[in-house]
Image 1 (cartoon, helix red, strand yellow):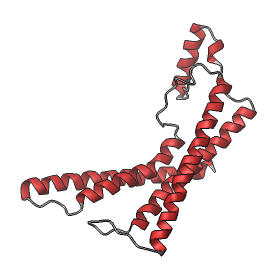
Image 2: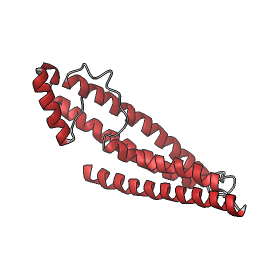
Image 3: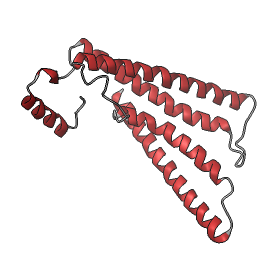
Image 4: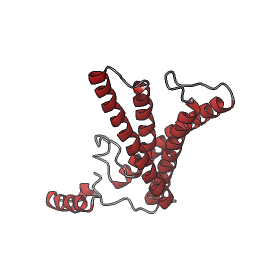
Length: 189
């Protein structure tokens, strides 16, 4: 399961990079065309708006997989390893619920726009169903990432594999352990 999620999120990261590159090119060409030739790109704003939305939707799963989401340790800094793991489980559960709901809503909208009333974007007349299916894929993969992390965290908590309790170390030992964790890229305090 971990290999599948790793490969899928890497592919989505590449897709996001391609979308961002396309957005940059469209923006540059639009500015040059508008400024020098008085000929802006028709639909440039729409391309940029939907492009950002799609790029972010498909890259969030990779961010979660790498544990690179923004976090503030104000709540967890005084907790021991089990407390931190419990808090991590709570965060993963919230991620599963939130991403799952968004994925479900995007899927139902995509199906509605595919089978029922077809809505198109204002300028370029792109079908909303395609946009919603792409966003659904990103959030569905994000749900899988959070679910995988939730299961792994519960296993760690049950097997008492929560890491060292840095609160019990002397200041010198704590500094040494923090340096070791930083070298390994596994610093989570």
